[in-house]
Image (cartoon, rainbow, N blue to C red; front, side, top):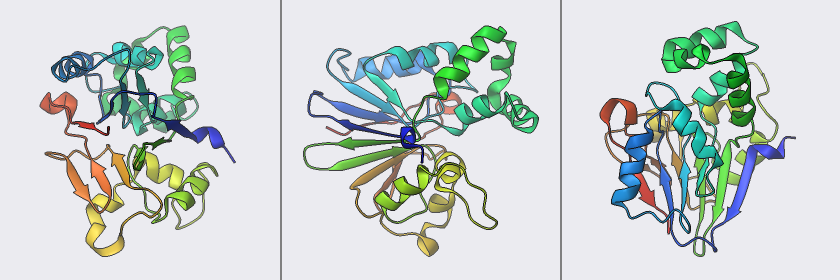
Length: 228
């Protein structure tokens, strides 16, 4: 069981809390949006749905956000490609073809340092607010109980024929947003879940799941939602 895949935080000491969709190297865009919100870098907190890197041009700047006390993120599939690409040639090739070519132009020491930092990122962030519990996951949740989903995440990326691990779905899945009317329902034991990965035109709510990736590097837009 890998409990480091889940980060639980209590937001009572935070003035305001926000969640933002995938950044994809759009650092300047994020800073402009935070300025428009009068974001307080000393007392507010921003949580990202992952995919800090690739496609945009300000990848190192987005990685540097990980050292800021006001910023948290879950791991996205682009971070996962970065991590796995060092051992898996197919993953490396896929990463390069999907916006990751910048990474392989860095010095070896720089690449290693980035990989080590990204490997520390949780797959799930759970936020305890005064009146609700909120989850942040990059891509998908296909289990209709938050507690069971977290248990499955901690098992890692197991391989069973015909079964997708919660770990894999959290990084790569799109089942809920594509087939929600047939196969999916409200996720119990959590009030709201915020997801990225699948680009939507605007903040899209399906049951208690909120999709907020509006295509940053393509559209020059970000969706930022105030949680408290």
